[in-house]
Image (cartoon, rainbow, N blue to C red; front, side):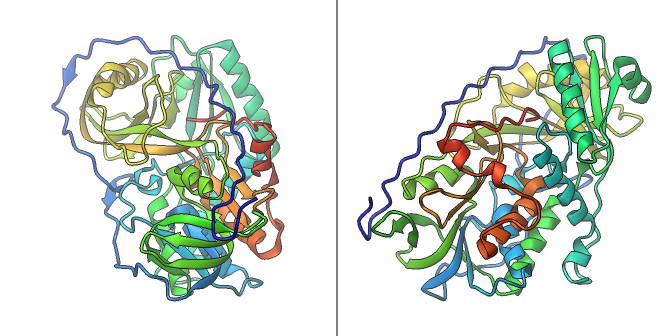
Length: 459
């Protein structure tokens, strides 16, 4: 039990990471290399264009001393919750969003691949992405037909999962059944069928592939984020540039009563949402809650091919875990990480320049021989808020600290889940239950009960 004016003392055990490493692909001799431009951009990579984040100065001090809802983290997940609260006619409270870095320079929202898929192993994840696809493509209508809001589409090149073992082929078959049961249009392809549709792949080792080309591919996540944030602010949500350094609970340790900001202000709250991304575990610890989420580095390269492919490249997930996709204009986005995948400091965005040459490029050039002749035009490191328990989102309220809500551990699919998770969290904050998709399978109680809800389709 916590004394008044001190942090809660509740500690929740987390299951250690039990993931296995991935095999290293065999290297190939690269016949042509242009000099790579070793630079990382804090940008939104938007297919054929790059749009820098536009920043407007924010106050560091909230105007009020108390808010009905405080959201820690103002990137796409926190901004989605804020916007959906303003959209809910039954919510009439005050909302404060606290964001430590208004440039979002190293936010996962900024450094994302900005893609959406329905190829998950759990039906709820499929349904969340289906809602996102509809939301993105009706964004203007959902934002009151505001003429400033652009019309957005999903670039449906699809995701191509490739299986080189019978065990993984069986996983793809089972996943397809789950996906089609909730309306996805995933199809399974033999190696011969893949070769007929996409002759640029080397497929000697491939037994089976799966692809869905409806509402699966690239979407403009930066514009979605900017409109969540802009519209929420225009509707009265307060955003401040500051950082939460402490949480204070009631005497029973059952509610968070206030947050303390780095600037010294103490702000009372009715309900609290943890949308702090890779810092989510640190925020939970302020309430005495142990959250099994850690920062894990992920690397991205933009390459230009000497001879571009003659058709769109699906977002291809090689059996090694390396992935590659269409980026537009003869350029392609490549992603991956080393086999050794430790937790890192949330401020560590150092690029591993040897990874491309020693591991990623050999895999890419083996799978697509045309990519033996490429140059790297841009590269950067980002981070997943990686759920080491089961690689699924952690949502909903804490069982004891009842006004502490989670939006953490998305493990790489947060951007595409932000509309559905924001809507559901706003419903819970307003009504104490879900009125659309039931997100309760993702609740934190599975962490305390050590009941992992494994998502098998993690990239």
